[in-house]
Length: 148
Image 1 (cartoon, rainbow, N blue to C red):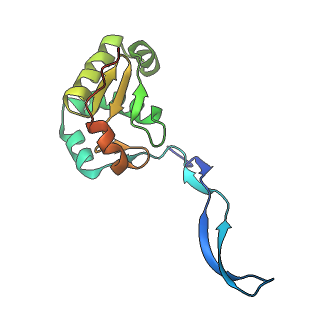
Image 2 (spheres, helix red, strand yellow):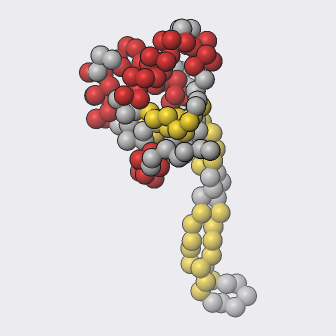
Image 3 (tube, rainbow, N blue to C red):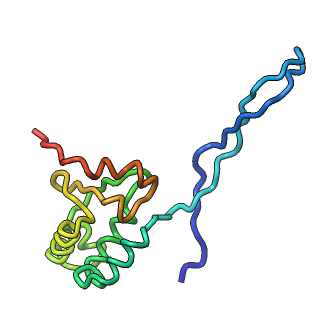
């Protein structure tokens, strides 16, 4: 059972305010700088429609969902890219490398992840996001680049 939510501080609060300059008596706009805000450290947004589809899909529910949760854990805030080395993931999840490859293939076929190049993938931000999903969706929709 989760007993507490880890948090981290990031960003700084900025606001503008009208103030009277004590030397000239003029009304001026000043910038106020506050303390960094505290955010949930391991928060990932999972969209409702995706959650319903995920639970009802027998190819994912109870199987590839373990890999999806691993991916969510590995995402950096504001990014949809992640590295996945099948052997490392297999060791961490205590399953075979073949199982990881099958789960990965299922997630690719369902449009949840896509391969960019060997071991580099993107998570579809219309399903799950760690950051601002609406700004990441265009990045996911781009065709993969051919690396020479």
